[in-house]
Each structure stands twice: as structure tokens, then as C-alpha cells.
Image (cartoon, rainbow, N blue to C red; front, side, top):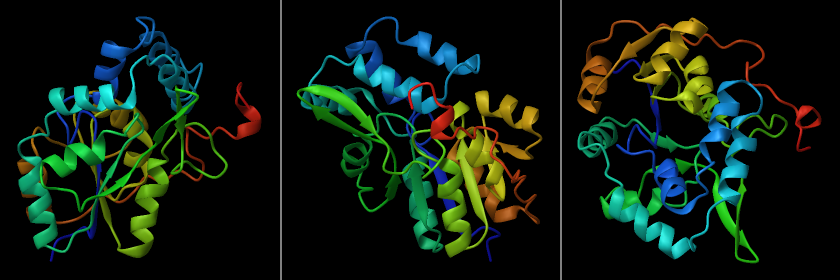
Length: 238
């Protein structure tokens, strides 16, 4: 029997080779959009606030941006076989994203993976202007748009131990609460700083092989208060 009972996988830069949100900002946003990422890195604002400012910079229609995303995005070639392996082994797999996310379902459907669960933000348009909404945010904390901590905890409560797979800053809080974390790129340094045991990976074949052979799970670090905790009353935009 496999040691985990559910999988939570980041989308941009993880299941998908490109960070599609960044690709859309490069193609349709104001050139100053990286300044908000820098502000997050400096601890001056949370991911939700930064993404809201960046979404407001977009100057393409939903149709134009979706067409661009479908043309330029490519799933990791090892991800579809991994998803099939997970289904064959009865492991629910959920994709999580703190990006613009409207492109995720169409990209998955184009690859024949339309049944996958997706937990994301929601990019809508009001009077023709893009507005980022957060149907999967924390009910109190406004630090992130999509609360990956809650996504992990929901599956732990309903299925049991959870594996989290990611690569970037928005994956920090999912990694902190997962039973085992697979990290690459920026998430490696983040896990080292937070004291999160992690298993390095390059492809989803690595993740599958590790899950088939791992003897014991390290368990979640699970601090009582998430380090990204930002009540609405503390937010500059509240």
C-alpha cells in the first residue's frame, strides 16, 4: 500500500513547464509587473495583494489570453502518465494554483485530463477590466489568493496522508502542512529555511518512484499559525 492517500500538485512551473501567469503578464501586462513580485520577496505585501495588482495590468480579452496560453503552455510530459498512475492507484490528485488560473482547465482538457480537480483563483471581468477573485482563499487570512494549506488539510481530513509537489514561493504553505513534500527550484531553499523535510525531484517519474519505495513519511511541520497569516484587518487593502 502506498504511504500517501492523496496528491496536491502545483500547476504553474510544476505540472505545467511554464508559469503561465508570468507568460500572460509578459505578453499582456505592464512592464512594471515584476515590481510586485519583488515586493512579495521583501515581505512588503502578500501574494494575494500582488496578484490583484498584476491582474489589473492585463490588457487582453479573456479569449485573446486563453488562446495565447493554449499556444504557449506545455504540460510536463511526465505529468499525464503520473496522473494516470495516481488514478490507477486510487489516489485523488488535485491541482492548486495561486495564479490567474482561468487557463488551467482548458489546458488539462486539451491533454485529456479534464477530470482532475482544480483549486484556484478566478479571473473575472468587470466592465471589461480583469478582477482576480479568491473562491479558494482562507476565510480569514488574506495573505494568499488560494490557500494551499487548506487544500492540503482538506485532503488529510478526508483521505489521510498527503504528498505535495511544488517548485515556487506560492507553494511554501502547502509544503509546511503536507505529510511529504517534493521540492525543486525556489521551493528547495524555502523548505530548507522553514525546516521542512523534502525530497528533490526533476520529473514526475521521480515523484512516482519515490512514493512507490518510501518507507516512512516525515510528517507535516504544521506550525500552529501559518507564517503567511494575514488577517484582513492587517492588510493595507482591507
